[in-house]
Amino acid sequence: MSNSSSISHFLLLPLADTRQLQLLHLWLFLGISLAALLGNGLIISAVACDHHLHTPMHFFLLNLSLTDLGTICTTVPKAMHNSLWDTTTITYTGCAAQLFFFLFFIMTEFFLLTIMCYDRYVAICKPLHYGTLLGSRACAHMAAAAWASGFLNALLHTANTFSLPLCQGNVLGQFFCEIPQILKLSCSHSYLREVGLLLVSICLVFGCFIFIVFSYVQIFRAVLRIPSEQGRHKAFSTCLPHLAVVSLFVSTGMFTYLKPFSISSPSLDLVVSVLYSVVPPTLNPLIYSLRNQELKHCLRKLMIGFFQK
Picture 1 (cartoon, rainbow, N blue to C red):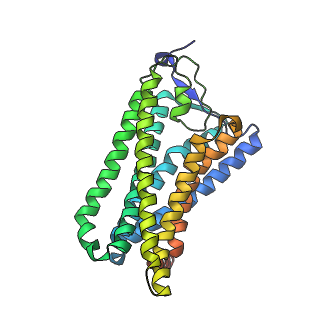
Picture 2: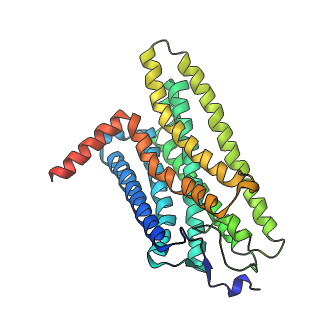
């Protein structure tokens, strides 16, 4: 038996059992991370450099791309390192840092998606009040609130989780540090404090989800009342990317944490964790750029200018 004071490192779940598959996963993760870095980096550069994209929607999109980059950079590099060197270890401090930053970026992303839903609601349902309700100062305050809420949430969970006494070994059934896996190592009823915090966070996330659903009900009702087909198409085209990103984010996260224990297995947990922690940050730039003509035009100019230099 061991306790948390004697644990110097944790053992993560390997991505594969054989060396060939480990190297395959290394190249796969490398490709995914480069795609995420390229896509999100292009969106950040486009929004920052082109004054035509200095709108509330694109301002929040820039913040979303920052959280996507943060999420990828928190989990993928360590997984690639372990696959390359055929190891599964992560230090105690490194695990705490990874857990904190993962929670920070994931929670901030969900709060930003909620704010972006409010942006679409005001733009379509209250267009005459758009400039008042979503001025530059209001947008900055909402973005700051999302980042601050994500930071506070991550800090509370990380401090509480790593204050628990651990006596069930140091093996984590995940390829990165995650709260449920660490709670399994706890040897006292103190873990109930973290469970309570998790329930509070789940209620907060559920409240944001209900707000998103209610907002989209109002949005679709307003869009269907638009007389012209072209107007309905334009309104839908501004909402569908956000709805697709929210659906991808929520569905993968819900399946990860709410799936029945009867179908749970290390290999399935590994696949699902990749789906919700790696895939959304990679696909978000593609989803948003497909239907956004202004963003596509700016990205095209940015890439042409880069290759001409």
